[in-house]
Length: 120
View 1: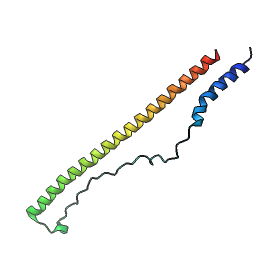
View 2: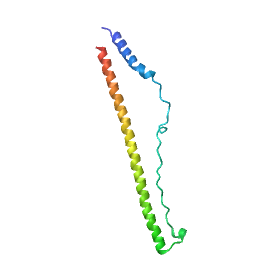
View 3: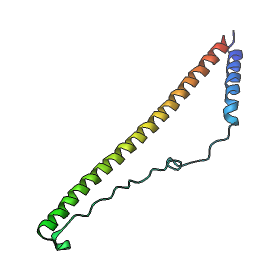
View 4: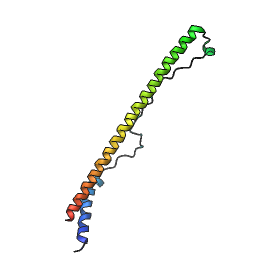
């Protein structure tokens, strides 16, 4: 028994499976972030109150400091929320990529099985 007919058949099957892939037009070249727009955060940092800059004294300065502390806390919460949301995006992107890889690997295994079946 010679291997030439089996090898020829296997190559023919692979070529037949590869033709639809080769016939597809490739997607235009893109940079990794070209299709993905990542918006900047819209958090506003509060201005630090100074006595010399505002010439405030006593209760007026204390109210300014209290307002700064409140705005500082809100700014920190805004930044944390933005970071959490972008982490969620990153996780979703990674999950989608892994799903595509798993799908390709499954397809590849099916092709290998079909090639092996055609050898018999």
